[in-house]
Structures are given as structure tokens and as C-alpha cells.
Image: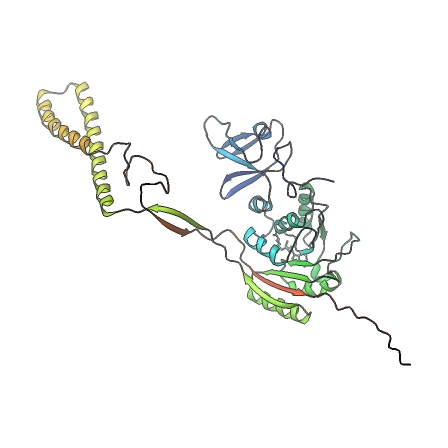
Length: 378
Ligand code: SAM
């Protein structure tokens, strides 16, 4: 059986393995290193041979003489894949994906139905969770998207876990050619009209287990129509959720006093003087080489006296570079270092990249078993 980097971890990078090159926080690129190949970026060129001689997670330096950039070569995960995959559609991002997987109680071995496949971002997230014992039947009616997704899943070693099917689930239901009984206990619908697909689910979901569903819709009107049809088809505990994900950064900030502000103003003044002194010294040196007239030299010597004062004053006031200066140059203090006063602060970063949609959840209990009892009337 083919191994998948999305299902198992390996430390060694082999030729043609999928490697995710982390360039910046917003820029991760998939590469397949081959002997003597190169990866060219605006941060420089990176030799595939260096990547092949490294382990996943390594920082690689650019081989360009003019650019000293670096990248990190990372092991594929569904989270990183969703940041680097070729977009064919809108996709489900990690904040939604992780929430949906846990709400649908997708676990190793779970059977899932998904429509549409789109860019297969969410398919990868589910595949990692269901693992080799699970199954995902994913449906896509756009032929080219279906073909690209099927090829990608094959290349990622996921073809035995994910069965991609080309078909319109709203018109034809979840018809497939693999001959398996789907027996799905989780359903994920990311379609413009999930209410047209929901009635077709009855024949393909589990007859023995509770089935959980999530419909991913960007408009409230779609949510309303979905809820109506879920109710009509016996789905229970219907709930709509919107995931709003923010990143909070917490750190310590040094407590600064009014004296620090005064020290800062002094520091600015000192630096200005320093700059003036340096500039004047340069001008003097230039004039000396040009051998200027005696008149000019007199004026200059008067100015020099003043400058001497500045220099002296400046020198006596400057803090040594070994001292801590809260606003200017000086000793570097590490966050939280002892001997200083710190306060805890937090700030919120801009909203994380996510395709905001409404998530409609519900569950359907398995059909009741009717026990036939023969009543003896004698
Ligand atoms: N969840 C996917 C992901 O994370 O990459 C993105 C899905 S994309 C937003 C919706 C997909 O549903 C599109 O590729 C579209 O072609 C497909 N689709 C729409 N209606 C469909 C239908 N009736 N049957 C099958 N696929 C359908």
C-alpha cells in the first residue's frame, strides 16, 4: 500500500517527496525536490540537492551570492497544505475545518460523505483524521476540478482513503461506481444548494449509527432553506454556528516611568549633537585638505572651540553601551528579565484567513428497528 505524508510522519526528505517551503507567514509553496533541481524565489535560489540532504523542518540558505534569504522545508500537514494548495475554488481553512471535524465526531475509521470536493482542502483535513481504516466519498460535478482533485489525492497517497467521484449530487444523489456501501456517519456539504442534496442522503448514510451533518453556506437565505429541508427529513438538534477566529498575542512590556521619557529626550539631544560633531569634523577635514585662507581658518577655530564644548558635554552625558537605556542604544534587555518592572499585555492580530460561512449542524438517529412479535391468540 502506498504511504502518504498526510497520514504518517517521516524525518527524511526523499527525491520527489512533497515538501512545503515556508517563505513567509503568508507564503508557503509546495515543491518536489529532484537531483540538481533548483527552487527560485524572490529571496534567492535554493538547491534541491541541499534540500535532499536535509531533514524536514530544516532552515535552508539561499545559494545566490547576492541574496542571503532562507526558507524552511516543512513536512506536509493538512493545515500547511490549505495555505499552499493551488486554489480552484473557495476553500475551507483550518479554523473551520478543525471545528467541523470535532463537531461531526470524525475519528479514525469514520466513513464520511463530502460534496463538493472543490480544491480538496477539507478533504485532506478529514483524510488525516479518518486514517487508513476510514473512508471519504467525495463528489464534484465540475469535471476538470474532479480530475485535478483525483490526481492530487493519488499523488498524495490518499487514493485508498478518499474515493473521488464525478457527479451532481443534487440531481443524481450520491451515486458512485466503487460498489462499496457508504455507511457514512458524517456528511459535509459545501454546495450552493445543499437542500437539493439532503433528501438523497437517506440511502447512503449509516443504518446503525447516528449520522451527523454540516452544511457550509455563505448566506443566511441558504441556511434557512437548509434548515427547512433538514427538519422535513427528520434531522434533529439543528444549530447554526459561525466560527470567528482571532489570534491573541500576549507578552510582557517593561513599565516605563516619566524619568524614562526625560531620558529619551536627552538621548535624542545627545544623538543630534553627536551627528553635528561628526558632520563638522568631516567638514573640517575637507577644508584642511583644501588648505583654506587664514581668515576662514580664524572663524573656524572659534567654531571649533564651541564644538569642543559640545563634544565634551556629549561625552560626559552619554550612557555607556553596557548600560540599559530604555529608549536609545545600549544593553539589550530580554523580555521578562529580572531586575526590571514588567506588565503583562495582550493584543489582537487581524482576523485569520478563513472563508467565513455559516455552519449548520444536525444529526439523524438510525432508523428504529421493528421487532416482529408473534402473538399467540390461542
Ligand atoms: N470544501 C472545498 C474545499 O475545502 O476545498 C471547497 C468546495 S467549493 C466551495 C464547492 C464545490 O462544489 C465546487 O467545486 C463546485 O463545483 C461543487 N459543486 C457545486 N454543486 C455541486 C453539485 N450539485 N454536485 C457536486 N459538486 C457540486
